[in-house]
Length: 107
Image 1 (cartoon, rainbow, N blue to C red):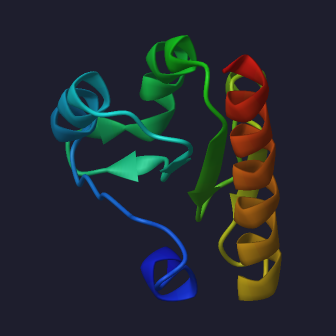
Image 2 (spheres, rainbow, N blue to C red):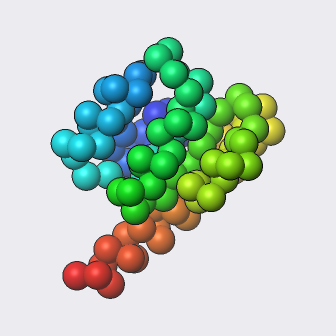
């Protein structure tokens, strides 16, 4: 869904496991993370404390509500059945704009 919504507007890198996600985070620079809570090798929520160390916006986009203990790590939590594609796209674009502005001011 995300790939088709952002087709041509952003470069997207995907990971299907926690291990792959952490390896990509370590080896690349990203402007935004979109995380599902259910991954084949564990809970996506368990990644949040580690991902927060990269100081970039995180969107949780999952079939389940985000636990309160993890809410402090995310910029936005979206539930697949409750948010429209337009809401998802708007959220992503707004967070990317903020990230780009922060980067420009830091330089």
